[in-house]
Image 1 (cartoon, rainbow, N blue to C red):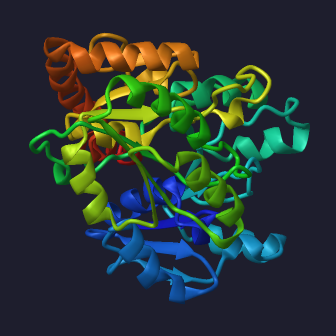
Image 2 (image 1 turned 30 degrees about the horizontal axis):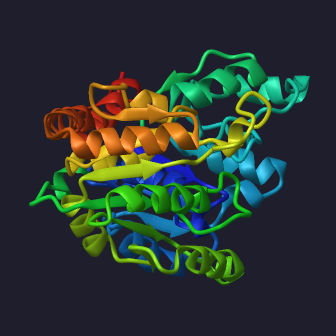
Length: 350
């Protein structure tokens, strides 16, 4: 069979690309797989950064940039085309088509032309029920949820340290900023009670993020807080394994109903932390609620006061910490690559 994959964001090396290319890599073992991207030089760095084997995939001309009739001709040659949507619905005439949404777009209902193009798609798939809620309302459809693949096999618990970890890009301007300044503020108060604990913030940072990053380092000064930029996956996994607690605050202080895109749409880093046995204490918003069940495999908070109080409670209750850690490891298995691939094979080869 012949498969095609397209993401307009391919050069961002983000979670959507990991989602799409995990499936592309798997299918390429026994089928022909084309990635639609004009610059084939992206293949090697993309493979290295995402740790995905793309050896058997082919990177070539972006057929979605072609005019109407050439596009029709080219897409007709595929058994299935997978499109990662940026909110638009590209026209494709492949035998079967999948449209995938990573973002809970919240714009007015779509026009008639878009509805016609949607009819060419056999499945519309969302990365979480949080995303699905907005996509279904916006496009007037009934999408299916297939959670992102998390490489939990590569993450293992080690001897736990008095360490709180948080992972997310350092940026105040991105679609859903990670609110590290909130975590620093709360940790300063935790540190007064538990000075033997430390906080490590890890994330990708680009040149345009330098001002925000400098400010974070400034407000963290004088406390047991370490900020690490652009850490390798191997070293990040080591931190996961040692961390006792994982924090996440994306969406804090934002209006979830009005700006759902500012929430965490799913939360791969939270699952990775769970796989390592780090107890997640995360915000009760967005996709985080689908990963963490309060008091079973982690804890949920809504305010800074709750984050502070819950963290101290978990730190000082060893039985609760152990119970939640064990529950977290068990829960992470729901989001494994094996589950992800099995769900896609059900619909692709049905």
